[in-house]
Image (tube, rainbow, N blue to C red):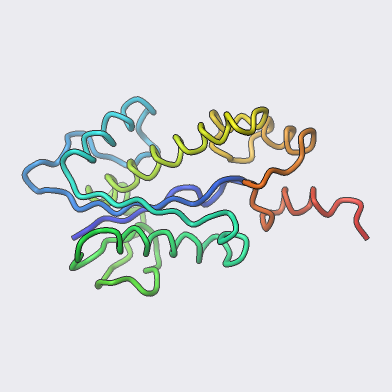
Amino acid sequence: IVGVDEVGRGPLAGPVTAAAVRLDPVRIPQGLADSKVLSAPRREALAASIRTSAAVSLAHASVDEIDRLNILHASHLAMSRAVAGLPAADHALIDGNRVPPGLPCEAVAIVKGDARCLSIAAASIVAKVARDALMVDLAQQFPGYEWERNAGYPTKAHLAALRNLGVTPHHRRSFAPVHNLLWQGKP
């Protein structure tokens, strides 16, 4: 049984990232919880512990895929890729209210699963730590957007940088603030 979660549906920039985690029942890290309620240092420590004690698969859906498919379908694509990256899962527990189509195993969706299921919580932690690290790397390549702090979410500083610095290749053109900025003043 694998837990599956994604992170990065709401940001204006960067991919959506999913993780699938198969916990070892005798080596479950202590303190697993929804990644949103953990401090960054605690998430990082838990992610390292999860990677050494469980089977983990990470996957992304790119900005181009998000813009082409929409964020829901891109999130499902990332989740499907994450599950496919693990050896033969029998069953997947998916955070949310929908099961992604095309999974290689049976699955059930669990609303607020990251707070109710340890394997989904583990997946949420691994996905969040991986995506945050990716956004820190992108922030070094594209300074001024504060992605190292906001992970691409539409903070005041990020929106101001969009207006002042423009749109990067890592911005989601289908998201309203980016789309509207690109089409300002065009006939």
